[in-house]
Image 1: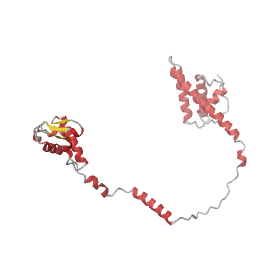
Image 2: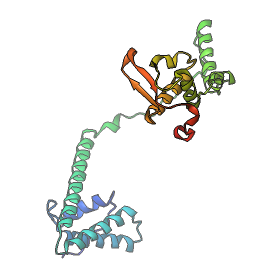
Image 3: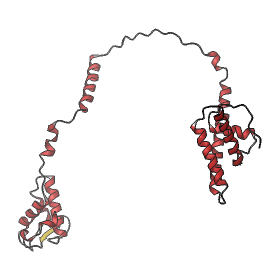
Image 4: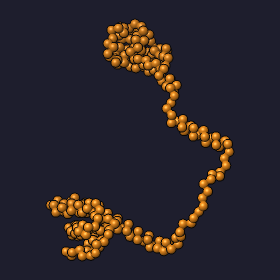
Amino acid sequence: MEQISYKLEVFEGPMDLLLHLISKHKLNIYDIPIIELVEQYIAYVKQMQDADMYVASEFLEMAARLVYIKTVSLLPVYEEAEDLKKELTGELLEYRDCQLMAGKLAQRTEGFDRFVRSPMQMDIDPTYTRLHEPTELLRAYLNVVGKKMRKLPPPIEAFKGIVATKIVSVESKIKSIFKKLGKKGEKHRFRSLFTDAQSRSDMVATFLAVLELAKTKKLYLDGEGDAMRVELLADDFENLDSQEWE
């Protein structure tokens, strides 16, 4: 294999160096002989190190990548090596196309620098000269004040409605249902259980109490809609186990 004897050049990156080696040694970019390319690449990087040139980490990373591809290529089963070669070939083709396009764009802009002139000195007056109506200034002021107020925490009064809300327990509504329905076996309208509900929490607790009693077979529901009726299946509240609904 021909030894590298050309003058050391500065390349923009490992892809730039790989394209140079492929072109110099007339390698097939679509079917890269990876062993030859590894030898040429590592030889160039070694010359860079011997010449005390700065070797960027990306060049060393590519060297490790090429050595890995070479290693798996020598294995009996080398499907991975073929996939890695295809990936590298695709990257090289993409990089080459970008270089060609950059060259064409550079040709189109050739000579544009002849029309560049030095910056002109401009006198700038920092005085604010715009005039505003008083109402416009007032709106701007109120807008700024409003943004500042929105960043403040809400006042204590805003939490009064939440803190003052009475939480109704399911156990208390179970007691209430037993008092309303009276004796075992008597049927009552389902809606009558909610007639004295004073809040949303009260209604939710009543409904959960009905579900709990129905689930534990202490209450029987019959019918639907306005015709729905409820019937107690237990004797009294005192005989129930309070742990059942906790």
